[in-house]
Length: 318
Image 1 (cartoon, rainbow, N blue to C red):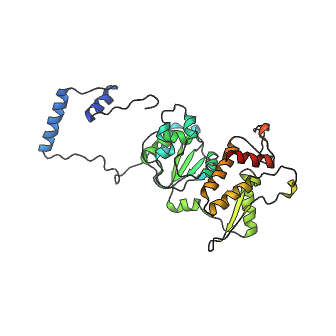
Image 2 (cartoon, rainbow, N blue to C red; image 1 turned 90 degrees about the vertical axis):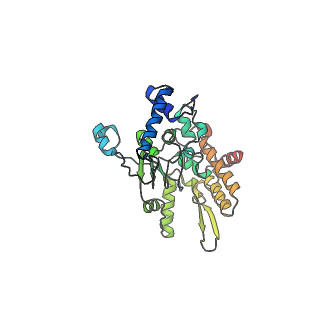
């Protein structure tokens, strides 16, 4: 429908004639009477109507997109692709969660991207991770609900190129592929592996966690905890430690410690406080503020902050 579009409620006959004529058209009374007589005659002869709405167990053969690609030419697309995954551990994520209906009147796809998955069950502290991801991993029946094509538009505008899930709604699946986005169906066991945990000794665990933190931006962003699964006793510390080489220079990134405090609040049940801290950190980073370890040549030098100033900036956003 789009911006300023109109919705018309019509009989099946009017809808059929409108589709044929290309404009809203009502069938004549003579045609309606003739169709009604044909229906009564069919019933009298013992004919039974086909039930086209019983879709659940009807066989469906998916288009062979690999074959179609070979016809178009493989050089028209990338043969391989990699990206950062985001894990959305939820089933039945519908198109209204992917892009809420209140934004459907917008005409710029970039706006769809800004509100992509706005109503999905995603914690506020995970929103920044989503904005940096290109692969979405979800559960069963992803893309159900309305058949709106705005859903794949929103995912594409948000930077998502591929969705991996246990199953997809049929129309959403085809809309994704029609817009050059990839859908991959995998088993429940494979999804579980994608959400897997690496068990290792303390030393190797430090190597893995420190390397992962550095790969994602900076050791200064790393928060961590050690929780006893039997007693619930816990210890929280930032993964970066004390940064002794930066002592007294007002250069160390305090965000790891601040986010660790949010983890502690969440652990003791202070959810609102944890959400407020994590949301503030996300807003500070989205607005371009950086400490030296995060700063790059594309960042604004006026927003380069020291340790104290970054802490104060987070406070202003809470």
